[in-house]
Length: 186
Image (cartoon, rainbow, N blue to C red; front, side, top):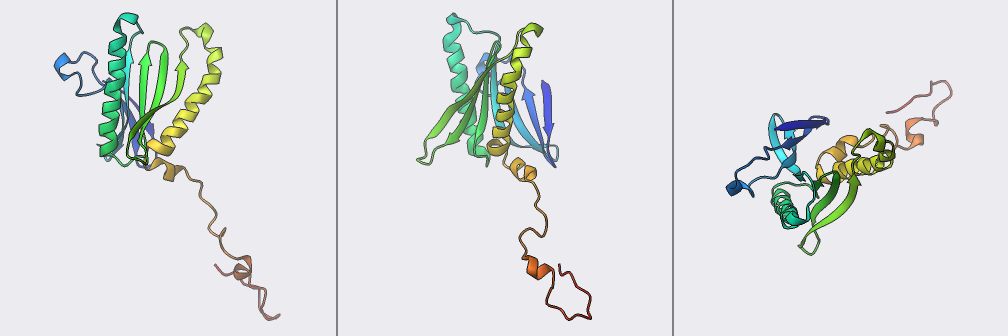
């Protein structure tokens, strides 16, 4: 199992890659990978799932589509268990990564929609044109922070100054007698 983590204040988002050599009887029990939020050394919620294929082949297209269906089922059960607005779903086939969002529509229907597609470079020679899709990955991280993680958006908000909403006339008392020092009221 490989682990990669993204730390936030008081919570850690961890990507867990499960063993891909699972028993075919338990094939639908867990995805190839999942993203979880860990709080106090325990998994608090699932925020994403992933399926990985070595390469796309026409003879196993049904298995590839089956993986997408499994991802939708994992996302549906994960959505029911957590309080996030959306579940991030990744399908990696060879060097192509497709990101999906899974949420529930106002009408009650479950919806899985494509967010982006990125083709990863196969060699160092193709690395420099990959700089443009890096912006897509940054937007995907922003989407994850805003909609998939229920507490990260609160941690990223910029703190306003303590007196931004106060009336300036109330803070600086200009209606004082001349022999008294001007006072500042907080």
